[in-house]
Length: 218
Length: 420
Image 1 (cartoon, rainbow over the protein chains, first blue to last red):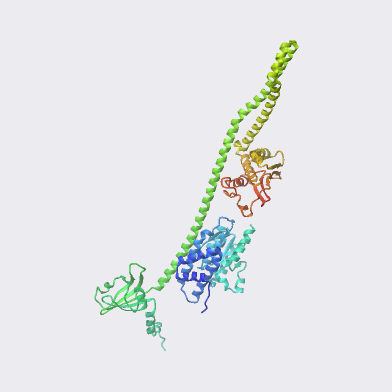
Image 2: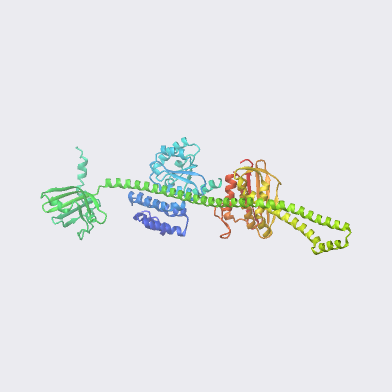
């Protein structure tokens, strides 16, 4: 069986996630931030790596879905712990709606995306998972965001994404839509080409650069 | 050939299934004697009863129903069917779906976890947890928003207090100016009369002297000459004239200062009004004239000598004063400050330039924040430019440009539209 070598801190974080030890996970995250105060790095290097590994452990039949839920819940709890220090006072008067593809239950990634927007002074709106596209359309009509960010974690839902994009394009032909998530690391060139006019981000760093470019032109 | 039914297919594996399920975690099987002593148990039953297969000394027990209830009616076969709770009243307890059988004096407990139910509950709990998480996130955001609003309100409150103070000071200045106006008026008018009367008195003296001279009385003429010399009348006449001239200049100045104070405070003009901007600027300059002189600053005004403008005069004076005070604080003794007024088609600009210390790059975007100050503790409130910003930006719908080079100087340009 394939083994993945993780840096000790990440391995420690992962072990505690799998054991369900929230307190330890939280203190490891804080330890990390003491050495490197970049929350983005924490998300990319610790949370993303650990949760991708959790996903892999489930795929390779080594952990249950319940354990995966537990790991996700703990990570989301830590995101909430950090959320207060993320919200900046220097607002740029821009709005982003972040959403998951219909039937997609994985919401940690899109929350991290929302956090990066918040760090850059944007107002983010997150509706949670399980929101039907029709409700999302209604919400976009109400909030009139500058960007819509959609996350897809499980490739199985790719068809749902295409359907959702089509619906959104019909309603909002001018709306800037960006997408990302673990699913795209496996998507073929052919399927990516079917996404049409959207911007795909592979990580939070590229997303940050993108937001900075928009902010610079304000 | 007859196809075997599914049941028959599974039952062909019965032995193996029985062995496997005995070893599994979801089916707990134990055999007890009538005293409740555990005689044999599979690993799952050992786990739930908290004991080892080698020891068989359970730390947990049957809580509901209790073991004794299995013997209330003496009979063979099934003695209980339903949910069985195993635990110790302290820690977590386990609830299993159980069937209890009696054969002679032995009790066999067959208890299984309802996995379908557990999975379903786990999923529901996960969803619930997600919702709680999202709700918490929303609450954090709203809390942060409320905190921000609170600190904005506090700032506004401080600014209100400050502007209230300025208002009170303006009232005081206007009141004092008003009170001074009357005595100044009569001192001013009396001085003119005094000057005239004294000239008349000396004129009369001279006429008396000439009259006596014309009479030709030597003795009387000598007495008059002696009196003139003794009383130093020549000197008195000259000195009194100088003194009244100086007093007149002095009282003129007092009059101007009082007028400036009155105009600066503009208590009567808190509303929008057409005024001569340059006259206002002059009166504002007079407030800082002493400091400009004390620091030996070379100050110059460049611009028209008159300019009618619709504005809030008292407030605009305050805005210009704040910028001037900062310029004075920024320059070295002997430094340069200029105030330039220019007029465009639809706006008027007031530009204050100094060759002082300049503004550091990293604080440039903070200078209009309330309470932000680089001045030593106690000498600045940090409200000056924020008030200027409010007056120019909010009240006059104008704009402020800042252009500053560290160690070279600063230019602050206030622009206000001609029609607000």
